[in-house]
Structure formats: structure tokens, C-alpha cells
Length: 120
Image (tube, rainbow, N blue to C red; front, side, top):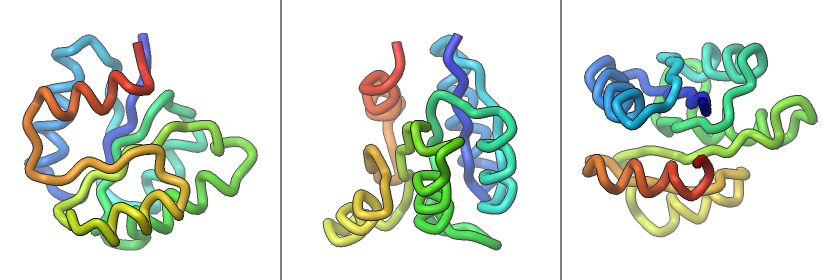
């Protein structure tokens, strides 16, 4: 079973995304800020992260860049997940090492399609 780390500072978004993924058969772990995300990614080494951009302590871009520059975590696939849905935001996210970009709000089918690009 594939493990997905969902990171969002909104308890509502965290619960919604986690429930959608768990219902689809994925093992889900969560973090509520950037610092916690780095720690959990390093410890649990998930197959995929769904990472909010706007968060306290470290934003999603910083987390993405840190994980992609670390030999222990560089292979974790990262989907940035944010309300910032301008093309420049997406390009900046990809420049930081993200593998995909998903805008909020999302439909369950969009989320699952994005995840399916990287996991069985």
C-alpha cells in the first residue's frame, strides 16, 4: 500500500484530502506545517506528498526545495496544492522541484487523477 503525506495548515482541508485518499485505498499520514512536514517526510519517507504552499514555519516552496535537495528525500514525489493558481505560481513550484501542481478548491476526481500519475 502506498503512503501519502498530506500537509496543510487547514484542519478542514487536511481532513477532506486525507479522507478522499484513504477511501481510495492509500495509507495517509498528515502534518499541519512545513517544519512538521520535513520531519515526517524524513522519518516516514512517503511515496508521495500533497503539500500546501501557504503554511506557517516553512512554506510549501521551502519544504519542496529542502526535500528535493536532500539525498534521503529527493525521490519523494511532491504535488503542490494551493489556492494560488496563477501560471507563475505553478512555474515557481516546478522550479522548486515539485512534480505536479493542483489548485484549490479541487474535485475528488482531480485529486485522484493527480495522485494516480505517481502511484498505482
